[in-house]
Every structure is written in structure tokens, then in C-alpha cells.
Length: 343
Ligand SMILES: NC(=O)c1ccc[n+]([C@@H]2O[C@H](COP(=O)([O-])OP(=O)(O)OC[C@H]3O[C@@H](n4cnc5c(N)ncnc54)[C@H](O)[C@@H]3O)[C@@H](O)[C@H]2O)c1
View 1 (tube, rainbow, N blue to C red):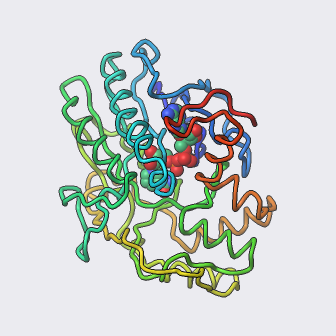
View 2 (cartoon, rainbow, N blue to C red):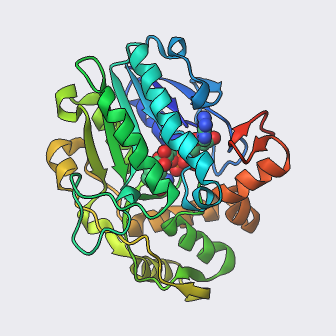
């Protein structure tokens, strides 16, 4: 297949692109380039990388593709809190714009990278795909808005699919330090302590970045009727865990003690998710990683590649990087549009 992946130069994209290439697909990327040069390993090469904003994509740019994988987004609650309007603009309106352009260009498949955070404060029972949305952040709201606006575009010639990913973890050439497993493991490495920002009681569904990528591949390769206008929670029941359990695992594996940041309190983003649908319909997407293996992987890469506190606390933290680009005058905070990104 010829696949356009937008957001290809981010955390998930840098793992997904080589996976698609290895599976024999031709990839073209489209990315605003926010993380160019913020490397934790060698980013993928050997494919066409377009630089641009998804909000400017034209149907003629998407002609000849068999699928669009839409990753580009403000992928983070802290940025969403600071810039809610820009988050809705990129994550909801930008996603719908891409879907419309893809449909107009005759692209038959559209894979939307959604998030389990649209379930928000879901209560104690695990939520399945037909459960209620209770997003508690602009980021979660933006994913609801996008799914609800893309779904009416589905027809005989256009099949959108919504992959509601659990919180990712694991190594990537474009590592992120602002997601819980990576954050706690990186803190153990750079500070010698497993530093909790909340009281550790909330539940989080987790999934390795490589397993997310394999779920995208599985959706691309199954017959369209299995995934036409369907949502899938991407993750595994065993990996819905309390944050304090992750902290204990990181501590046991790395030897660093668990500590609490000043004022660490409750966290309203507390949700448990049901993953039976993906297990039944997309067996190729069955996750292979476990959280302890992911902790060991990040620790090993941090040791081999020399993870610095500067990278861990700034370049690999989305809010920090966005602020850095804004201070350099290449990113407008009101609309999150870039001019030229310095490496
Ligand atoms: N990482 C997770 O834990 C997680 C979990 C669930 C869902 N998701 C979703 O998966 C997708 C990818 O996440 P990620 O972790 O790789 O994010 P990321 O922040 O690492 O990468 C996002 C990429 O999108 C690009 N981008 C941002 N705005 C753009 C725009 N307007 N036009 C073109 N490019 C733009 C950035 O330059 C960046 O390379 C996002 O939609 C995110 O919401 C991520």
C-alpha cells in the first residue's frame, strides 16, 4: 500500500514508519517538524518527508494513496490546558480537514489516532468502545470532537477507523519523557529517584509504542468491513494499572527509591478500559510488550545512549519543546503554526 503518515516525525511515527516499511508498504510523511533534531536514536530514513501543516493539506496532495494515517496532533494534556483553542484547531478541525481532503482525493482508508483519554473520568467499570465519553481535558475533548465529525464522512468509498490508544510507553528515536512509564524510568536514570507527580492511585491503561504501531498495521491490512467506521481501544486488560504499581516496578528494576513531588495529589484522569473488541477482531494487534520489559528497554537505551537531564527535562517534553520553539519565534502559540524549525 502507499500510505501517507502525518505526524511521522513524532514519538509514535518514528516507530510506526519503519514497521510499515518492513511490512512492504511505501510511506510518505507530513509533519510540521516540531521535534526535528530532538533525537534519542536515529530517526527513520528512506522515505519522502514532507514538511507542512495538516490544516493546509489539499486533496491533490493526497491523490494516489491507499490510506492516510493521521497522527499529527497536540498530543498532550499540559499543552492542551495552556492552549485549548489551538488544541481544538489542530486536533479536531485539523483531523476533520485531513479526513475530508483524503475522501475528496479518493483515499479509501483513514486511520485516526485517537485516545482512551476521551473516556476521561469513567468510573470503576472498564469502558468499552460504546461507553460514554467523559473527557476531563481539552485534549480528550478534541479527540471526541474529531471522531464525531469524521464518522459522518464514512461511506462505501471511505472507511475511517478510530484507534483509541492507551497511554504509550517505550523507547522511540523521538522519545517522550512526559508519559508516565517513560517519565518515571527517566527520572530514576537522571535523578536517581522515581518521582511521582500524583498520589499514585489513578488507573492508567498502558501500551507499548511498538504495539500501537502494530495495531495501525493490523487495521491497514484487514478487510475494510472489519474496521469501517469502527473504534478500537488499543491496549490490553492486564496493562491497566495504578500509577503506584508502575512506580514500584520502576523502583524494583532500577533500584531507585519512590518519592513524591511537593503537592502531589489526586489526579482526575482516572479510567479503566476494556480491550476485548480489538482482541476478538484484530488478533494481529495483540500486544507483545509488558510494562516491566518496557522499563528495562528504556533503561538500557538511556544507559547506551547517555540520556541527559537536559534532554529528559526539556527536549523530550512536549510543552518544553513547544515553549522553546515559541521563544525562538518559529511557532505562534495562538495558532500553533510554525514557520521554520531550527534543528
Ligand atoms: N503518546 C501517547 O501516549 C498517545 C496516546 C494516545 C494517543 N496518541 C495520539 O497519537 C498521535 C501521535 O502521538 P505522538 O505521541 O507520536 O505525538 P508527538 O507529539 O510525539 O508527535 C506529534 C507530531 O505531530 C506533528 N504536528 C503537530 N501539529 C501538527 C500540524 N498542525 N501539522 C503537521 N504536523 C503536526 C509534530 O511536529 C510531531 O512530530 C497523536 O494524535 C496523539 O494524540 C498518543
